[in-house]
Image (cartoon, rainbow, N blue to C red; front, side):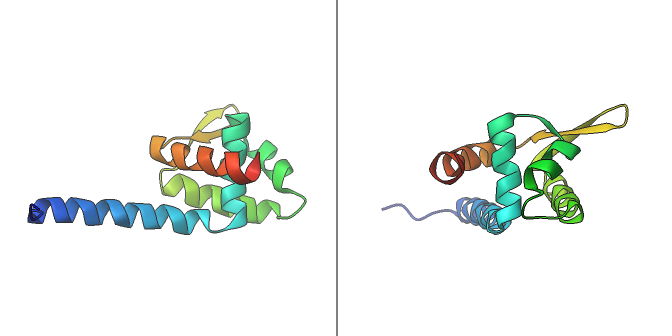
Length: 106
């Protein structure tokens, strides 16, 4: 068996840190629900996301978590006049959430 180089070990550790960061984000029902909604419906307005979550979460909670997801690079936004549209931006996050959506959200 070949011993991993320092660079390979560092790269692996960085990827593992990225994965655990994503799992922390996905560990909250609202954040997972937002991402599942974006998988299911594609691009959504902020208002549509708030409406989809209104049964269990407040508008301020949804806004807070949308900001976190945007800061982390998991979602991207585009503005159309006064409307902000959200969509998934990270292909790896999309793959993970698609799997979770198929198992739990769909």
